[in-house]
Length: 255
Image (cartoon, rainbow, N blue to C red):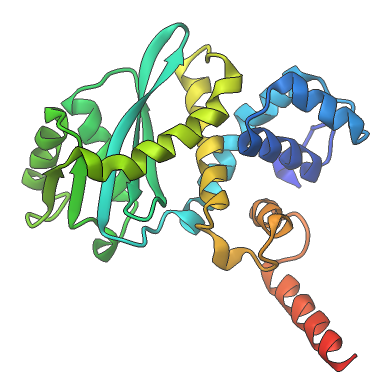
């Protein structure tokens, strides 16, 4: 368990706290009390350090589980996040079904930031997974960014950019659900801590939307928790769990 070496709590307890914070939109102090009710006396500042350390790691390890769009029609937009009293910009992309594709937190809102975000999203995909249509609002920055990416060969020349505001309702509705998780934070101190925390929020949102359903062997919240634990080598492997579930089902049918 090298991922949790020198920690005073076991890895499953740490992941339990990080998952709860990133999934349910609660404050660190409320989570401290909830953990205490479960017999885990941990300070809220410790939970904060756990989130900063392990939320980005969860997002990194589960990225390939979740980041495969079900459609090549993307909805791209940005929303606002306050960092140290100033507004920053969270660029987000979802497919037409609302599945999260990628996100990027930037201190600026311009063509350079839009290009950096779209380049990041495209780099993680195979050619057949890349978009054929990108729908944005009327902001001119996206058109400039897409034109530059085409010139650099980072996306297809056949990529269609449509500026239709009402078609972006999917991503705007998803912004609102993410903001419900961000609200209890009451402001971030630095851009790095904001991005680290948002990575946890985004990956938990993706799991909640069922984007890694194929890896959820029990098709419930416990199966979702096991996806995270297996990514850190906690508990039996997916193959072992699948065999055990199959054996239990066969026993239930023969009983």
